[in-house]
Length: 116
Length: 115
Image 1 (spheres, rainbow over the protein chains, first blue to last red):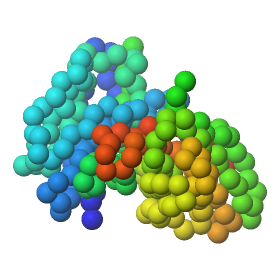
Image 2 (cartoon, chains in turn orange, red):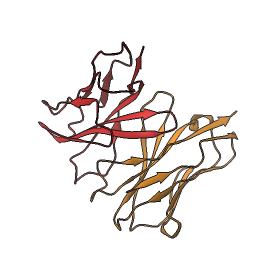
Image 3 (cartoon, rainbow over the protein chains, first blue to last red):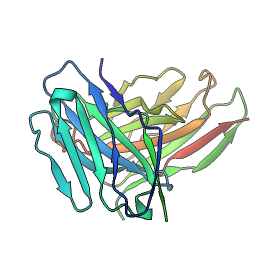
Image 4 (cartoon, helix red, strand yellow):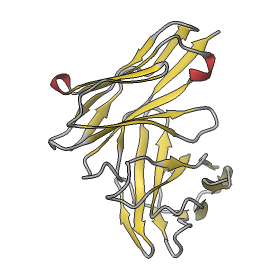
Protein backbone atom coordinates (compact mmCIF):
# COMPACT_ATOMS: atom_id res chain seq x y z
CA UNK A 1 0.00 0.00 0.00
CA UNK A 2 1.13 3.53 -0.66
CA UNK A 3 1.87 5.92 2.14
CA UNK A 4 2.99 9.53 2.50
CA UNK A 5 4.65 10.80 5.65
CA UNK A 6 5.02 14.44 6.60
CA UNK A 7 6.77 14.26 9.93
CA UNK A 8 6.67 17.99 10.58
CA UNK A 9 3.27 18.81 12.00
CA UNK A 10 3.88 22.52 12.50
CA UNK A 11 6.71 24.86 11.56
CA UNK A 12 7.14 28.52 12.43
CA UNK A 13 9.78 30.75 10.91
CA UNK A 14 10.41 34.45 10.83
CA UNK A 15 9.64 36.22 7.57
CA UNK A 16 12.45 36.11 4.99
CA UNK A 17 13.91 32.92 6.40
CA UNK A 18 14.13 29.84 4.20
CA UNK A 19 12.10 26.80 5.19
CA UNK A 20 12.01 23.21 3.99
CA UNK A 21 8.98 20.95 4.28
CA UNK A 22 9.78 17.25 4.28
CA UNK A 23 7.87 14.50 2.49
CA UNK A 24 8.71 10.80 2.50
CA UNK A 25 6.68 8.32 0.49
CA UNK A 26 6.25 4.56 0.17
CA UNK A 27 5.08 2.74 -2.92
CA UNK A 28 5.72 -0.57 -4.64
CA UNK A 29 5.05 0.82 -8.10
CA UNK A 30 7.82 1.94 -10.40
CA UNK A 31 5.52 4.50 -12.01
CA UNK A 32 4.00 7.02 -9.69
CA UNK A 33 3.35 10.73 -9.29
CA UNK A 34 4.07 13.09 -6.45
CA UNK A 35 2.27 16.33 -5.69
CA UNK A 36 2.35 19.30 -3.38
CA UNK A 37 -0.79 21.24 -2.50
CA UNK A 38 -1.24 24.38 -0.43
CA UNK A 39 -4.29 24.91 1.79
CA UNK A 40 -4.69 28.57 2.78
CA UNK A 41 -7.10 29.60 5.57
CA UNK A 42 -9.95 29.82 3.04
CA UNK A 43 -9.97 26.02 2.89
CA UNK A 44 -9.54 25.02 -0.74
CA UNK A 45 -6.40 23.16 -1.73
CA UNK A 46 -4.28 24.74 -4.43
CA UNK A 47 -2.10 22.66 -6.71
CA UNK A 48 1.59 23.57 -6.62
CA UNK A 49 3.49 20.88 -8.50
CA UNK A 50 3.34 17.38 -9.99
CA UNK A 51 6.38 15.21 -10.56
CA UNK A 52 6.52 11.75 -12.12
CA UNK A 53 8.81 9.02 -10.89
CA UNK A 54 11.02 9.14 -13.97
CA UNK A 55 11.91 12.77 -13.61
CA UNK A 56 14.32 13.42 -10.76
CA UNK A 57 15.30 16.87 -11.84
CA UNK A 58 14.83 19.49 -9.20
CA UNK A 59 12.39 22.22 -10.04
CA UNK A 60 12.37 25.89 -9.17
CA UNK A 61 9.42 28.22 -9.52
CA UNK A 62 10.11 31.66 -8.14
CA UNK A 63 10.72 31.31 -4.40
CA UNK A 64 9.59 27.67 -4.44
CA UNK A 65 11.82 24.70 -5.17
CA UNK A 66 11.38 20.97 -4.97
CA UNK A 67 13.98 18.27 -4.39
CA UNK A 68 12.98 14.78 -5.56
CA UNK A 69 15.30 11.94 -4.50
CA UNK A 70 14.21 8.41 -5.35
CA UNK A 71 17.12 6.94 -3.38
CA UNK A 72 15.60 8.25 -0.16
CA UNK A 73 11.96 8.25 -1.33
CA UNK A 74 11.69 11.93 -0.56
CA UNK A 75 10.10 14.91 -2.26
CA UNK A 76 10.97 17.96 -0.19
CA UNK A 77 9.68 21.47 -0.71
CA UNK A 78 11.70 24.60 0.05
CA UNK A 79 10.42 28.14 0.28
CA UNK A 80 13.14 30.75 -0.04
CA UNK A 81 12.77 34.17 1.58
CA UNK A 82 9.45 33.26 3.14
CA UNK A 83 6.57 35.70 3.23
CA UNK A 84 3.50 35.99 5.43
CA UNK A 85 1.34 34.91 2.47
CA UNK A 86 3.11 31.56 2.57
CA UNK A 87 1.36 30.74 5.84
CA UNK A 88 -0.83 27.73 5.12
CA UNK A 89 -1.08 23.98 5.50
CA UNK A 90 0.96 22.14 2.90
CA UNK A 91 0.16 18.63 1.76
CA UNK A 92 2.33 16.17 -0.07
CA UNK A 93 0.47 13.49 -2.05
CA UNK A 94 1.16 10.35 -4.09
CA UNK A 95 -0.71 8.69 -6.94
CA UNK A 96 0.01 5.34 -8.49
CA UNK A 97 -2.48 5.84 -11.36
CA UNK A 98 -0.96 5.70 -14.85
CA UNK A 99 -1.50 9.37 -15.55
CA UNK A 100 -1.26 10.74 -12.06
CA UNK A 101 -4.99 11.10 -11.80
CA UNK A 102 -7.49 10.09 -9.15
CA UNK A 103 -7.12 8.47 -5.76
CA UNK A 104 -4.34 10.57 -4.39
CA UNK A 105 -2.91 9.47 -1.05
CA UNK A 106 -2.22 12.54 1.06
CA UNK A 107 0.17 13.07 3.90
CA UNK A 108 -1.11 14.56 7.14
CA UNK A 109 0.06 18.02 6.21
CA UNK A 110 2.48 20.56 7.65
CA UNK A 111 1.12 23.80 9.07
CA UNK A 112 3.54 26.59 8.19
CA UNK A 113 3.36 29.89 10.02
CA UNK A 114 5.43 32.81 8.85
CA UNK A 115 5.98 35.34 11.62
CA UNK A 116 6.17 38.96 10.47
CA UNK B 1 -15.61 32.41 -12.93
CA UNK B 2 -14.85 28.74 -13.43
CA UNK B 3 -14.48 26.61 -10.38
CA UNK B 4 -16.04 24.33 -7.82
CA UNK B 5 -18.83 25.46 -5.54
CA UNK B 6 -19.60 23.64 -2.34
CA UNK B 7 -22.60 24.36 -0.15
CA UNK B 8 -23.35 24.88 2.59
CA UNK B 9 -20.08 26.13 4.04
CA UNK B 10 -21.16 25.27 7.58
CA UNK B 11 -23.74 22.70 8.57
CA UNK B 12 -25.00 21.43 11.88
CA UNK B 13 -26.79 18.13 12.20
CA UNK B 14 -28.44 16.23 14.96
CA UNK B 15 -27.46 12.64 15.51
CA UNK B 16 -29.54 10.26 13.43
CA UNK B 17 -30.16 12.70 10.61
CA UNK B 18 -28.95 12.36 7.06
CA UNK B 19 -27.44 15.43 5.45
CA UNK B 20 -26.48 16.17 1.83
CA UNK B 21 -23.52 18.30 0.83
CA UNK B 22 -23.65 19.92 -2.57
CA UNK B 23 -20.78 20.10 -5.06
CA UNK B 24 -21.11 21.79 -8.45
CA UNK B 25 -18.37 22.43 -11.02
CA UNK B 26 -18.39 24.44 -14.22
CA UNK B 27 -14.95 23.37 -15.40
CA UNK B 28 -16.33 20.66 -17.69
CA UNK B 29 -14.23 18.12 -15.81
CA UNK B 30 -15.12 14.47 -16.12
CA UNK B 31 -13.86 13.25 -12.75
CA UNK B 32 -15.10 14.37 -9.35
CA UNK B 33 -14.06 13.39 -5.84
CA UNK B 34 -15.05 13.72 -2.22
CA UNK B 35 -12.41 13.90 0.50
CA UNK B 36 -12.76 14.09 4.25
CA UNK B 37 -10.25 16.10 6.29
CA UNK B 38 -9.74 15.54 10.01
CA UNK B 39 -7.14 17.26 12.20
CA UNK B 40 -3.86 15.37 12.07
CA UNK B 41 -5.09 12.86 9.49
CA UNK B 42 -4.77 14.68 6.21
CA UNK B 43 -7.29 14.03 3.45
CA UNK B 44 -8.97 10.68 2.93
CA UNK B 45 -10.92 9.71 -0.18
CA UNK B 46 -14.60 8.91 0.33
CA UNK B 47 -15.95 8.43 -3.22
CA UNK B 48 -14.95 9.36 -6.73
CA UNK B 49 -16.63 9.40 -10.10
CA UNK B 50 -14.98 9.36 -13.50
CA UNK B 51 -18.13 9.55 -15.59
CA UNK B 52 -21.82 10.32 -15.24
CA UNK B 53 -23.88 7.56 -13.63
CA UNK B 54 -20.79 5.78 -12.35
CA UNK B 55 -18.83 6.13 -9.10
CA UNK B 56 -16.38 4.16 -7.02
CA UNK B 57 -15.78 3.78 -3.31
CA UNK B 58 -12.68 5.32 -1.85
CA UNK B 59 -10.91 4.39 1.35
CA UNK B 60 -13.64 5.44 3.81
CA UNK B 61 -16.96 5.06 1.98
CA UNK B 62 -18.91 3.47 4.83
CA UNK B 63 -21.76 5.67 6.01
CA UNK B 64 -21.69 7.84 2.89
CA UNK B 65 -23.51 7.78 -0.43
CA UNK B 66 -23.16 9.74 -3.66
CA UNK B 67 -24.84 10.19 -7.02
CA UNK B 68 -23.62 11.47 -10.36
CA UNK B 69 -26.66 12.19 -12.49
CA UNK B 70 -25.11 15.21 -14.17
CA UNK B 71 -21.53 15.89 -15.17
CA UNK B 72 -21.37 19.09 -13.17
CA UNK B 73 -22.87 17.78 -9.93
CA UNK B 74 -21.64 15.26 -7.36
CA UNK B 75 -23.61 15.50 -4.10
CA UNK B 76 -22.50 13.62 -1.00
CA UNK B 77 -24.96 12.31 1.57
CA UNK B 78 -23.70 11.69 5.07
CA UNK B 79 -26.03 9.10 6.50
CA UNK B 80 -26.88 8.29 10.08
CA UNK B 81 -24.73 5.17 9.68
CA UNK B 82 -21.59 7.30 9.67
CA UNK B 83 -20.28 6.96 13.22
CA UNK B 84 -18.18 10.07 13.40
CA UNK B 85 -19.38 12.52 10.73
CA UNK B 86 -18.02 15.74 12.23
CA UNK B 87 -15.31 16.80 9.77
CA UNK B 88 -14.33 19.12 6.96
CA UNK B 89 -15.46 17.81 3.57
CA UNK B 90 -13.72 18.78 0.34
CA UNK B 91 -14.98 18.23 -3.17
CA UNK B 92 -12.57 18.18 -6.10
CA UNK B 93 -12.58 17.65 -9.83
CA UNK B 94 -10.06 16.84 -12.54
CA UNK B 95 -9.83 16.59 -16.29
CA UNK B 96 -10.70 13.22 -17.81
CA UNK B 97 -8.97 10.55 -15.79
CA UNK B 98 -6.09 9.05 -17.74
CA UNK B 99 -5.55 12.12 -19.87
CA UNK B 100 -5.05 14.90 -17.40
CA UNK B 101 -2.14 16.40 -15.54
CA UNK B 102 -3.14 14.92 -12.22
CA UNK B 103 -4.12 18.32 -10.91
CA UNK B 104 -7.16 18.34 -8.69
CA UNK B 105 -9.25 21.48 -8.40
CA UNK B 106 -10.83 21.88 -4.98
CA UNK B 107 -13.82 23.67 -3.59
CA UNK B 108 -13.64 25.67 -0.36
CA UNK B 109 -15.11 22.86 1.67
CA UNK B 110 -18.08 22.21 3.91
CA UNK B 111 -17.67 21.92 7.65
CA UNK B 112 -20.17 19.51 9.18
CA UNK B 113 -20.74 19.42 12.92
CA UNK B 114 -22.93 16.84 14.59
CA UNK B 115 -24.56 18.08 17.75
